[in-house]
Image (tube, rainbow, N blue to C red; front, top):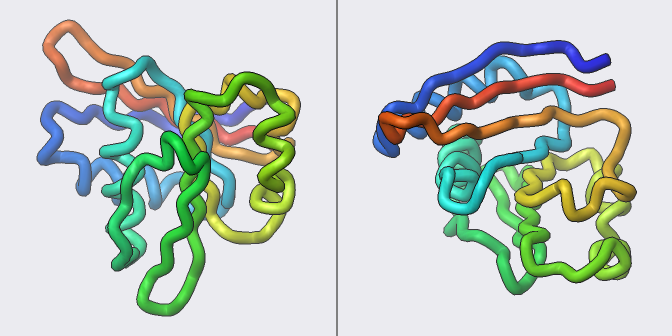
Length: 145
């Protein structure tokens, strides 16, 4: 059963960095983070802010067509960013070595994880992003082990 870690409210994109710090404080002990939410809710924006909070100096962008981007911080720690929106089946994700990435010991940030449910590790942080009527984002965090 998942452990609820809490929730974060993001009222404006300018608050993404503060939200990222809060999420990092709650979830840094788990390496695979799964981002759920509809198109346009701000998954990539939040991942950019999370990477910045770790000191990633590379340009962070959605790997929509590449499926995975690799970033590094100043200490050469590696971060992987996945976007599975455009895959047709889990085999495509399997073919790029998704399992190797997930068990590499590096942070993995995954957009559209519902498209590869059969490949997901047992331990992960689930980040659900919900667009509210006032255009704020409510971000729910849970830990799955």
